Length: 147
Image (cartoon, rainbow, N blue to C red; front, side, top):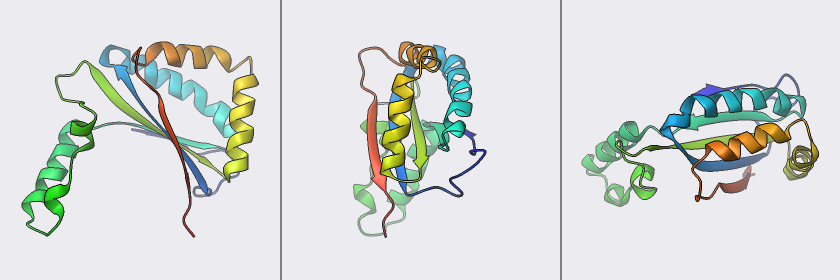
């Protein structure tokens, strides 16, 4: 797990969270980590906190099994995200999630627009898209803080 804090701005988290979920071949693990580490200063400069995590298949299954064994009503309907997205231990892929914390939705729109126009950031984006599993989707979603 890598976690980084912005050098200024957001404080603890902001009110808008953008999640990205993607797969990458296990052989690209180190290159994905390097790519993400190289992108952090750019996000910090734009006052975005970024965190990234790799799915822990074994831990996830263990937590689900433990919850189901508790006997509490409703726990039998819990499913492991690893099972849902078919990320088994012997798979040749890893599943990653990124969390991008913005002040608000407008901040997210502004920063994403800047990223798409920034020629200096373009090589990192191209490299990233070359490292993730080809033929799969980058799943993205935005979440607002509940009031």
